[in-house]
Length: 322
Ligand code: SF4
Ligand code: SF4
Image (cartoon, rainbow, N blue to C red; front, side, top):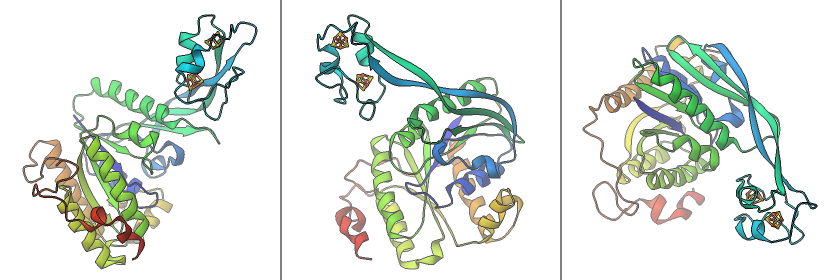
């Protein structure tokens, strides 16, 4: 079984539509919507909710001054400098790691649990689907992503027919993304030919490389800037990323979304052909037949083994002057 994360670095590149489309081409697969801050895979993946449960977090740490002996151990152990000289925990800096409470010799530190959202276990025609709804203003979504992935793993142990899980990743390179890509077998990066998307692509590529994750790449709306699309292709080849396909701007993506449908159930046009090509490339990887794709090269080397000549990497300001 392989886990493939569909990620983009930036929101609005069409990642969720492509995730639903790829899953729609499988006979059996599971899906996890890891974009818990802006979860919308459930809007286009037809599903039936089988179970829902509360997402509970316990990161409201506080110190009981009557029990505190002012030994200072918590302050010295807190890596986030969240505890003041008067032994008051600043909730803005506190990351909820619990180290202070664990080591406090007088058990003066406690925390309250609260419901921060809902976790849904659903069923689709193709297999299980895990998604969530985070409460308004709630954070710490990396933990929620990990819980969704754990539920998926438990389910897959009972279902040997499923060979792939598609994870719809969150934008950015923060905690939710790290929780999404940790331990996955590959990432499909969905980008577009725009200055901000390229900027985020470069950061995402560095992150995936650090995690030694095999990368595939596709360009959505490739025809809106032909020159930048060509540069992105060069970048991917130079950095040892497997380039899969270009998808041209297609208003049917939006139309399908509005109808609550997967684009593959909506059209057989050139977009559908491009997505089938991406799927075929990923299928080879899932089945262990992907002999063309290079291994992830080290951070300073391109696929040729020579120092990178990519202008995005050599001249980061390049993207700022286009
Ligand atoms: S470790 Fe416990 S007893 Fe020591 S200063 Fe912190 S809260 Fe007080
Ligand atoms: S829970 Fe962690 S981050 Fe928060 S105050 Fe304690 S040690 Fe610091």
